[in-house]
Image 1 (cartoon, rainbow over the protein chains, first blue to last red):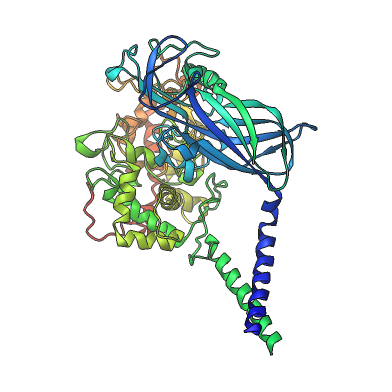
Image 2 (tube, one colour; image 1 turned 120 degrees about the vertical axis):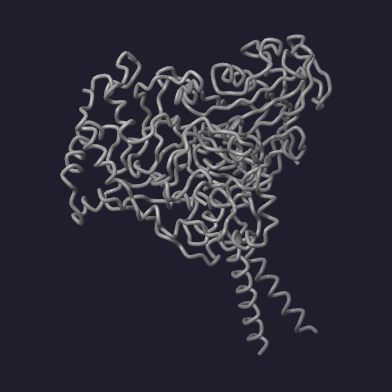
Amino acid sequence: MKCNGAFNWRIILCVLFVLSNRFYTFAQNGKVSLQLEHTVGNLTLALDSLFQNSLGEPFSVRKFRYYISNIRFVHADNKKSYLVKNRYFLVDETNPVSKIITVSIPPGKYSSVSFLLGVDSLKNVSGAQTGALDPLNDMFWTWKSGYVMAKMEGRSPVSNLPHKMFEYHIGGYKGAHNVLQRAELRLPEILNILPGTVASINIQADVNAWFNAVHSLAIAQYPACTSEGALSRQYAENYIRMFHIQNLSLQ
Amino acid sequence: MRLWLTISAIFIVLLIFIVFQLSFIPGSIHVQPIKQRIPEGFPQPVYEYKNNPLTREGFELGKRLFYEGRLSKDGYTACASCHQQFAAFSDFEHVFSHGVDNRFTLRNAPPLFNLAWHTDFHLDGAINHIEVQPLAPLTGFNEMATTIDSVIEKLKQDAGYRKMFKKAFGGEQINSQKILHALAQFTGSIVSADSKYDRVKKGKAVFTEWEQNGYEIFRQRCATCHTEPLFTDLKYHNIGLATDTFLNDRGRMAITGDKKDSLKFKTPSLRNVSRTAPYMHDGRYWGLSSALDHWQTRNASDHTADSLILNGQPLEKMEIKYLVSFLHALLDTTLLKDPRLADPVPGNRIHSPGQ
């Protein structure tokens, strides 16, 4: 019996040794979650419920999806930064889990976070993808290759389209059509990541910005924007301003 | 004894651990790699299967999918329905192709070969990668008119496909990426480089006098855009074709939004051109000499046409005859009959005028 006990002990030690080697690099990092909350002004967005945009137009949202990629954390002291490579996240209002984006980052003191709203141009021309980038997610134009970076659909009594609907499918990764924008968000305090730290950054995304930020884009005037071009770029310049950091929390 | 037991136990645990980890490395599935064919004198291909290793199993699956009618709404319209091998994978003698529900496409189906050398696809360059191209015809309402989910669902229900996917990519899971990777393994492997022209270049054949005359005229007058050895510069040109007022096809401009791209279409390869009638993006010309007549009778008043067209001398009647002779020497009969590219399903019931 005693013999068996010692025997198991050694095996456990051995397995632990192998495992610890394998996860050593991960254990050194901390974890940061970007927790997104979709709002209209200060009201929490609820699908198919009536809200009013800051141009005074009533509207309700049916679909609200966008890609986040190339997340970058900037160090407070030197201006170095850490880029989260090759991770693509599809945020979808209908899927609460998608609104929490967790990444692993090395220890350090960080002062700001930024991310690309959309899928970078390189990935747009890299062939068949899977996961968040699977064309099944209905965020890929099949008749003219490229990802829809952000999509919002809904209804508004001021729309002149059938069913009073509005549809914004914003895409384009190349030249004059490029809608890729980077949201740069300064953290309200320095985020100190130690090995094993779990932190969350609560970010508010205000849908209002789509209609009214740099450009005033009333639903009555523009109920649809579903192809690349100048109008898409205006929406992109607007929606990139929808993000605001609410607070940081450490666990 | 106890020490021995312990040491051997540790070894066994380690071994199990290593084997367990190895099973997650995709390379450990048993596949037969295929070397991509790059014909002598061809440039380096654009698509080199970097993220999609070319294997016998992947190629065979891709071929099966290419000839699969279930990739469409009606169950009978396959890729091969409009891209037939005997027509160099173009749609034999069809101005426009027939999609499901008696619908027509709005452009003439291009032949498929040497696609691994293309940077973008379709006559207007709408598609930026060989792997994502099939999504356009699959979902096009006037082509195969289906959805990706419905295709995946149909394939999942077929034990034969589950087996083929497992053999090619490991794991029975079928997803869009695997379907598209397999199709690219097949379409990218269609290589045309065995015409009489190629044999002449290798010193294994001799042009006839007319072919030789044609080749010389070709080199002076056509080769700028129909660049050897692919016989296309892979660029977009407006060759001064009168706009069809019904189709109003603006070509490349619809993709780039740039007025300078109005009426530009991708230069088609001249390889196998004697098998791909009718000609031009809208299939307006039947026969090689009528297509070539365009350069004799073209409307020079269209100042938006490419300068090479505007400033070029019209072709003489005899020059056209010589050119036609030369163009026939670009037919690759090996490609048209290659059993490796043929329909793997005996008695396959897909729409096709050749069946």
